[in-house]
Image (cartoon, rainbow, N blue to C red; front, side, top):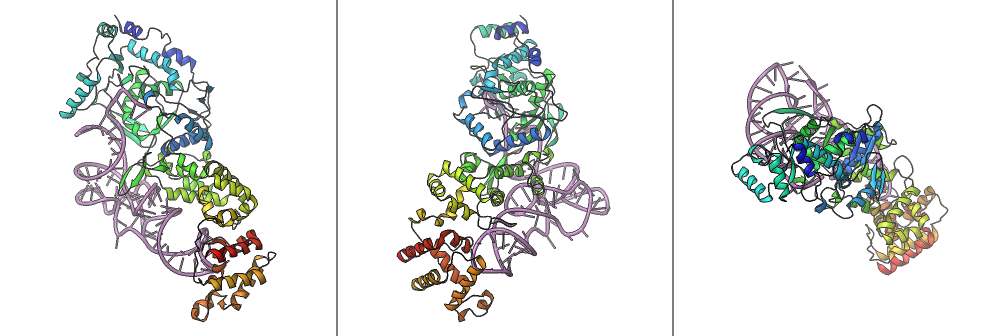
Length: 552
RNA sequence: GGCUCGUUGGUGAAAUGGUUAACACAUUGCCCUCUCAAGGCAACAUUCAUGGGUUCAAAUCCCAUACGAGUCACCA
């Protein structure tokens, strides 16, 4: 019996060869320099910020080079598959508008290089495995889990290198006849790659971010096909898929760095050109004094749900992610505030080789700037869309008060130095609830300043509302009237004068206006009082005073 | 334990042998000011993990040590 016979025995129904597939999936006809990249998640968990970074980088790489960005569902680990994970991936890519050019979803296949779901590619993998067996570069291995742990324990104890190599690869030199006999006996087996590497020899690998790295050659006989479901392992699927899909650049997490020697040998064995690699650093998290990998369990901000629920503008999240990914993105963004992010000349060399801490403060800052630059109507729309999904109560209130809400959001918004009040949509209502009559049926606590005497406050308000306030007044006139009343009631209208002799007055104009602010809003910190009064109007201001009389 | 990578301020980082170690965020203070936000100004690493070495000159090159991270599954 030959290796070829053995291959036929294991895969009797596979008649295509790697060469056949070579013809089915020819080189892509793209212009020079176009990058073919992919986002290849496994549906074993929900998309997190690290995945988002990977997807975004891929998108930028493809778009900026006129290339192709495809999505491949790596579902070869059936046992760990999480329900809803795939839907969530599509939802997020859609939400952030970083859709792949080629993908397969809900029965729809877009692109010529599919299937894009690994479990549907099993025949292809088998053809490649079969070929390897037929040339004697892969073999069935009958080691049981118990034997495997035994080997590992021994290696650990005697401080040998861990793994199946050399004399530990017991099935490596089985003759085809012996192997065939055991298969026919019904023994379980995996297919292992028969490595020809030498651990004592080195080779140089060039990673696009980390530069040249010297590795020892791979000499591990790694499983390439699992028993049971007969699905390939990641390493083998990587070889087959990224070759056949003509991937030019692989963006993947740093945790893959250490399997480069294996992948290198795999590609070499088939004579395929290796794609270029961009190994991205992990996103870390500071937890007390220790720095660790960001965790889906402990860190709510790790999962992509978080940013949507909080209502961060999509561009803020993308900018934050790219800021971490590429150290000169921030500068580029500053110089090109209106360009689409995918025009950024992404440079793998500018990626940090060490892990970065994901900084929510930074995200907040980026986000504040985005929200500050939006038109009030646009912000309202986004705010409402968010509320519809995540806060029904707020949604009802703001859609009932659309005009007032837009007016409020517009306060000090236009012009070169807009207010930066909000880092996300979820935070808006807490800073504007007092504008809505509907929201006043809550526990009210007045954050008064210097003036706390109830009678005095009521006197100020009544005098002002009855004899001074006029809705027609422009801001200057409005303020002059306040000053007038302020002086009349024994307060100093000029802050400088007041500061020289504070004891000569009941208080300053700041104390005086604070009274109005607090009666109208309960808060001591609000946007411009004039605008708030304009929006509220006299009648509602009177109502607020009545509430004050009752509740203070 | 083996292999690989990393270590510049609270955070992200720039600088790739040559004056006072960019910039952004955060923090603090001052100014402006009817509060807040915004804005303006300023402070914040005498030092680039530690110890040696090379050099006229080192955060930058070399060596060692320490610490941190990743990986070593029929998981990706």
